[in-house]
Structures are given as structure tokens and as C-alpha cells.
Length: 452
Ligand code: AMP
Image 1 (cartoon, rainbow, N blue to C red):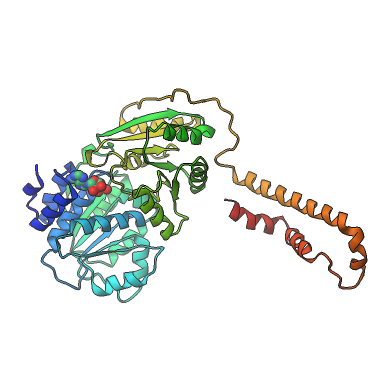
Image 2 (cartoon, helix red, strand yellow):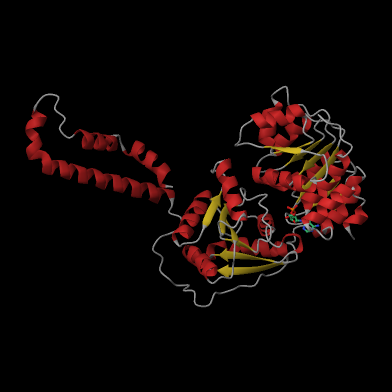
């Protein structure tokens, strides 16, 4: 099947050609014809399947006879990165078409987004929370909406967005076309789909939860404390050019990125505590090849789309099998070839078994020759919070006693001065220790923040 067989508008076909897509992917073959007919869709499609173009092309075609000044399509996405990525895809697919779009998500100013509503941009791509913020204002009316897309619905569920989705549904026209995409169909998502869709064309349900065919998956059994060293070893061996690394927590993301930088590897990080500007800069730097490694928590990494990304490393085993499929969907996109390596410590073997059960196969185990699997580790990647606070307190206590000892040594000269009323001979150092004396609660709280 060729794109030309899909009865797409010539301006879309030119854009597709310029993007270098030679053939439609399976989800595009299945989704585009019913969507073009105006039917609702229920599609099981993972990231990397080409799902964005599968819903965006029919939307663009539908909006082509423009009626300016009205928002006619709304795409809901779980994260800012995914929303930004979808907008980028829209812009490249619509490069020869008059259709325009805007993204609406948190972490950036409301002003330009308000303008998008007021001017009635053709397509709005939004995260649920920020969209609801706008809905409180009189300018944010989507009365002319014709198409709604729910992208990565299962991720919306994971992130607790289902009530927000229902709130949004109450504020948009019920007569519309709905395109529903989810990598997996847990029961609450199946219920939501039933509520939202009218006799949908269902796609790819039997092929759900399978990683793209080009991905080579391998398991690297390794002790928890040696994971950072193993990653550096793989990078130094030159097996991986650039790599997206997933960790379990924001803290581990920070620590791992710091560790890699110390080892002379250009690395950046992306997670929910970073500002939108920081996330955008990290992602742009990674895409441009400025950073060889991007470390991310997987929620923040939704929507990350990097062309030719050869490697994904699961530094920690995902606790939910669907997350594994999502994560490794970043490589081997649209039938390219990529590698997905997963580091597994003994404590994580249970989670790995669950993933293998879903995949229906055992993944190959790999040991790296010459890597010292029994090395002693100087510093743990993740120091438990209680230990970190204890270390900070101990340092403060030792600073304090050193300060007191110093003052003690200086006392003979100063004693006379202290005896005088109001005399404060050692002002600066006293105020320093006074701060310390505020008590362990205040001291460790402040330091705890900066020590992360
Ligand atoms: P997604 O929409 O997140 O599944 O992304 C799929 C990736 O594959 C994106 O980088 C697209 O640019 C790319 N892509 C989409 N459709 C095709 C196609 N028909 N041929 C080749 N690449 C495609």
C-alpha cells in the first residue's frame, strides 16, 4: 500500500514525501481510511508506530476547506513533551496546507495560549490540566469543535487525568468525531472508550503491546550499585552513539546525569521538577547532538521523538510492563532498527519476569566481557534521604564545633571586648554559628534542598 492509495490531498502527499516516508505504517494503513470517512476510531498503537500521522493526516484533510477563526480539532496528550511533539508533526505535515495549530500546556505563560483560543487556531493540542485552566475563562470556547483526539489514553489514566478528561468532555460538543489512541487497554480505558466512541472502527487490538519489529532487546544483569559504571563502560566501548536512558526517580535521573558528566560524557536530564525551558533545552541539545546521553524519568520522556535514535537503556526495570513497551518504543521507530538494553539487578527480577510474560518470550541475557562485575563501589548513586539528611547534620555539627574551637582559641584576645557591654567582637562568625543554632530542623531543611 502506498500513501497515494489513501486518497490524501496532494499538499499532504508532498509533505509526506519531503519527510521521507516511503510507505504508510500498519496503523496508518488501518486508521486513515475510516478516519477520512469521519468514523470514530479505537486504536491500540504504541509510540513509534506512526500513530501521530495516523490521526493528524485525516484531521488536516478534513480541515482543509478552511473556516478561519474557529478551533475545529482538539488533541489531548498526557505530557507537555508529547503535546509539543504533536504540534511539530502537525507543522511538518501541514507545511503545504493552510491549517495551523497551537499547543496549550502548563509551565509556560497563558498569554500566547489565550491568543490561540481568541484567534480560533484550527487545531489545539493540549494537556488536560492547562486546558481546564483556560476553560474557566470566557474566551476558551470550543463550540465549533469537530474532531477530538485522545492520545496515549492509558498514560492519561496512569497520570490521574481521567477525571479531567471527563470534565473536558462536558465542555465540548458531543456531536463530533473521536479518535482514541492507547498502547494498552486496561479496564478503565475500555470503559472510557465505550463512553466516548460511537460505533468506532477498532484497529490493531490483537497486536497490542508488541514492541516494534526492528528492536533488539537485551538484558544486562548487574548489581544495583554497578549500573552507572556499566553504562559508562558501554558508552566508552563505542557500542552506543547517543542514548536515551530511563531511570525510576527524579533523584536518580539527577545523580546519574551528574555522574556521567563527571566521567566526561556529555549528558543532560529531563524530569518533572525541571522547568519547561530546561526540558526544552535538554531535548533540543540532545536532538542536535550536543549531549550524547539524555537521562529521563519515563513520564517526562513521553513524546520524546528523536530521529535515528539507536539506543534506549532502561537503567531501572519499569515496574509496569506497558511502560517497558512505551520506553523501548523510542527506538526502532517506524521500522528502523534500534537496541533496547535493560539493566536488571537481583531485586528487579520479578518485574522483568512480568515483562517477559507480556512479551511472551524470554529476552537474551548479556554479560560484558572485561567489565568488573565484582568491583567495589565508592559512592552509591542514590543515597537514601535519611542518610543524606544525617550527613548534612553531621557536617553542620562538625562545622559548628570547628567554629567554636576557633573562637575558643581566639578567646584570650577577645575576652576583654566581650566583657564590655554590647561588644560583639567576632560578628560575622557569630552570626554564622547563630544560623546553625536555629536547630537541626531549620538547618537540615534548607541544606537538604540544595544537596539534592
Ligand atoms: P509516533 O507518531 O510517535 O508513533 O512516531 C513515529 C515516528 O515515525 C516519528 O518519528 C515519525 O516521524 C515517523 N513516521 C511516521 N510515519 C512514518 C512513515 N510512514 N514512514 C516512516 N516514518 C514514519
